[in-house]
Length: 256
Image (cartoon, rainbow, N blue to C red; front, side, top):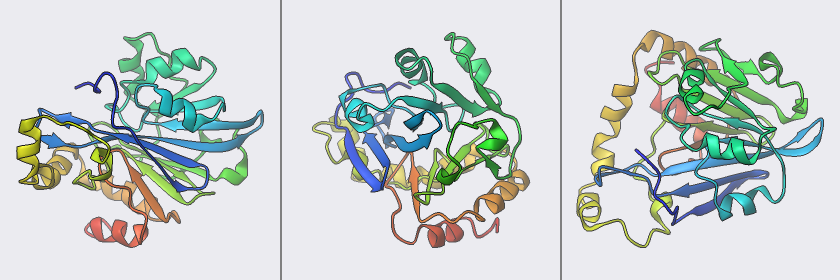
């Protein structure tokens, strides 16, 4: 799997103040239109205003404009799959700290990228200070839950100030209409298969394949449900901006 090069069809959204998302097409095998999305959270640090980048896309002009000249303080991989563009961001922002769950360090070591913060505590709510992120202003209210029950160790990020929850594969909200809204061409095969909503059909199967321990996932979901989020941003599919908590509870009702 790789991102399109050059990266085109980028869609910018601002679901909450100081939160910018950049989405783009990302299709597997020309059949399943998952879409991809990076999230930039602008926050206050002891050094001044900066940015927290989650699941970065290949750096592009849209990323540069979204940052608006801010330094990047943290680059976060939300699981052991969503890390493909971290090296080029780290090369561009060498002072940024790379964050991820256990297992990411081994993957990034191959590229010569050091993971500064490895989250080894699973399935419970952790604050920024719990992870040694003492330079983040407390008022930002960052919280994290790393799921051991997912094969790729899903890492969810909550920004309390904006009440936004950011996930990778924990939730798929397909079809990814918004992420393909600026695409000019997807290929004939993709267009034909899209008529049959292939991505919607496969959604529950993809989710099921990602799970390895439902008992552990239950602990993580229960922890995540204690957070007061109003918006859910996911890497694949449309952002949930209305009744997000109610939809979360309905989606995971068997775990709650």
